[in-house]
Amino acid sequence: MTDTDKFNSDLDRLLSRAAAPGAMTPGALAREMSRLFQINARDFGNLGEALSDYWTERYGPSLAQPEMRKPAADWLVHAYCLLSGCFEPAMDFPDEDWESIREIVSAEADDLDIQVLTEILTVIVDRGKA
Image (cartoon, rainbow, N blue to C red):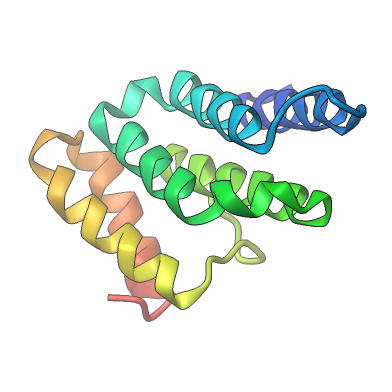
């Protein structure tokens, strides 16, 4: 099992627990999902935290709708894949998110490992999101 598979599995388990009536509020679910992302993205310094903050602001409120929970979790998996160099051609973000991701990466660029930065920027350029 890869780190990405484990992260995805942990998110799925969290979503399953949250689906039980009265199990957790949407706000608590957003905090737990964000925390899980930050734990898994800890090797990427402030970039993981910044992406998590963006996700929480943009997608946290949508967790009140059960049908939006899996797409929100998938966004975090895709973000983790972008950071860890395993972003696949089938993965994507909405254009507005690409713009924000690009800005966040630029803001954190000085503190990123050059290989990580290069891989992320290559994906952004290859997708025409630069």
